[in-house]
Length: 320
Image (cartoon, rainbow, N blue to C red; front, top):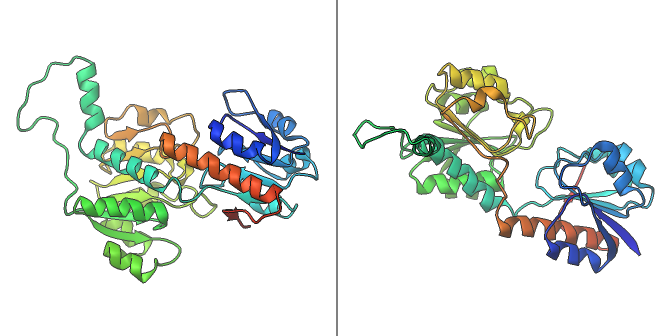
C-alpha cells in the first residue's frame, strides 16, 4: 500500500481521506521540521502533504526516493517549492486555490479597517487602562468612501478584496502581468494602470501577487517614495513582496500613512521597527485561518494526493 507523509497536523477529515488510499503518517512535532528532519520523514513516501514552511526541492525529492509521486501544498502559494526541479523528476505538485479566497479577502479588509480606524491602537489604549473621554477630535481615523483601492494582482483574492472595497464606496484600480477579463473589469468598474501610476494615485495599495524573483521586494524604497504620504499598504500575499525594513522607515518617518500586514519577510519574526509603530495593523498569518477554510484546504490537498495515487489527474495541479 502507498505511504503518505503529512508534515504537520491537519484536520482529521483530511487524514481520513488519505487513509482510504494509503498508510498515513502525520509528523507529531508541533513546529516546522528542520530540513534534515523533513528529509528523514519523507523517506520512502509515495505522497507528501506539505505546509508553506516546508522547503520542497530536488534534495527533498531525492531523499524521499524514486517512488514519490505527489507533493500537495496546503496553501495557494507555492514559493516554498522548486516546481521545475520537482516536476522534472516526475513528481506532481498541487496547491489549494479557491477555497481560501473569501477568508483571505475578509482578513485583508479587516486589517485595512483596523489601521484606518485605529482599532488596534484604541484597544491597546483601553487595555492599558489609560484615562480617556469622548471628544470630537479623539483618535480620528480616516474613511474609505471615495478613496481608490489599488490592487496588485487582480486574481481571485484580489477580486474578492475589490468587491468588498466597492461595498465601502471605494474606486478600484489594478495592475498586474496582464489585464483582467473585460467582464471582471466591468463588474468591478476597475481601471488597469501601470504600476508606477497605481503607486502614485491609489490611497490603498493591496498586494495579491505571488512571490517570485520579479515580485521580491516589489514594494521597496522606490515604490514607497512614489506613494501618497497618506497611502496605506496592505499585504496578505507573501512577506518578502515587501522590503520590511524600508516599510518600517517610511512609516516611522511619516512618508506613508500606514500598513496592514498578515505576512512577514522572515516569519515568524517581525522587524522590530514595525512593532514599535501604532500606524501598523498586524496579524500572525491568519489570512485563511477559519475552521471552515483550513479544513477545506487540507481536504483539497488530501484529494489531490488520493487522485494521483489512484491514477487520476490531480484536481489543482501546479505546472512548472
